Length: 159
Image 1 (tube, rainbow, N blue to C red):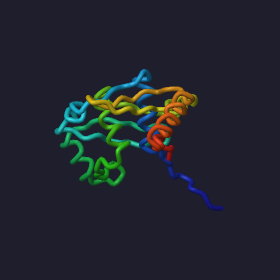
Image 2: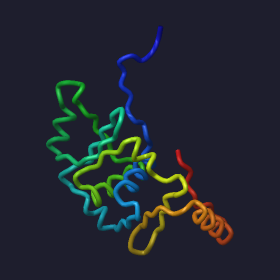
Image 3: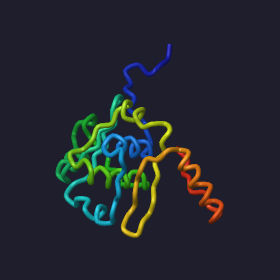
Image 4: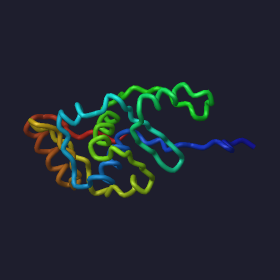
């Protein structure tokens, strides 16, 4: 008899899902990120991503704490170093620092709470980038208008 008995699986959401769930949970009315928000990320802290079977915790820890986790003697408490790669992870880090410096815990409930009739719209402006949930039919109309005017498809497909 096979199986993964005793193996605890973690939530394996992609960063697009994490970012959308966090944004809906913390600021469902939307958010504008400015260049100074990126510059405001602390240089003495790093974002810790803790994935568990029922939740994902994002928090900021000191460099000393990060060092102690990457050099822990016990494998079960050791953390790997991970560069902030991928734009969704970078966006999540900036948003988290701007709206939840104390950190945030996301569960399946948070992911399911994002209304399926809404889509996350990103709009670049001269001063920053706006993130807002809009109805899918409005997004579809905007997509068609841009495609007709510029011949570009502006929708990003979920992973």
